[in-house]
Image (cartoon, rainbow, N blue to C red; front, side, top):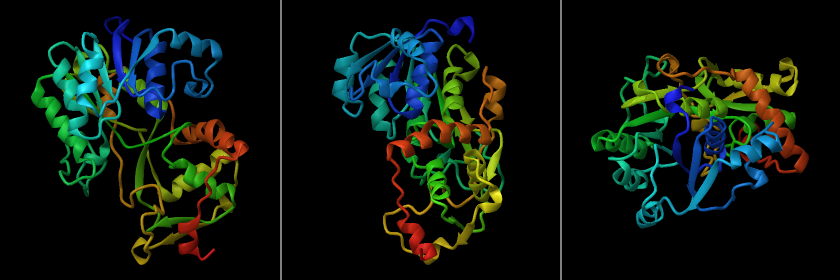
Length: 335
């Protein structure tokens, strides 16, 4: 962390779930004063806010640099009334989906904040025959992440000093999106792994701690102003490879993994999701972030999946909190 970035007062929107929680820890551990803005479902000091392998002493220490302002980010009047008179060096907008979510904050702080860091998504890129996706690639204005694109454009037009982060699939312990857990559940139950298509689609994943450190590294870095950064692991993995890597993380012999490929067009799953990733090549290059920021990738896919298995899945299993919903699998496999 550069001297320029030390000791800032930062606002984090959210900050109590998954990536926001890890980001809060990283920022507080770096010595910043972290102010959360959320609805208060998990108060400061709640044991549920500890991240894996964090000691009680470390938890107490970061809590001493963390406070919360209760409010609803979807209510513009609430944002303005609750944050009136509050000054920040930087804002981390971690959970804005539509431009209407972020516009009140942007308008309120565009002439006073030094940096506005926005969590966008690599899902904004237009499907391409040339991979990996780079920050200069065309975007898809019909994407289901159009709200994030609209927000990026509003940030640019507003004149606020912003940086936009585009992660691919985020994974790691405490993930509320059943991504790696989908594979772990089936391997744990000794079930076949139904994978759409040929199984060789390449996808990009980024560990949540790497993402948090990457976002924090934007602070105090003038190169990051007005920039968009992809963030993920520096390698991609196939769907079949994901199943095998998850098996390795669980200590299961890969030769025992049964993978069944299927054509998703032959099934009507209704509103259920039969597979946790989009059936196409979807990965980016993080080289720009690695070059511009004081950031390194600590978790490769195997290290990251082992962390997730040991510090999340195993705990859920012991507590009896696994969903084990194999209804779409049964439609595909007949068992």
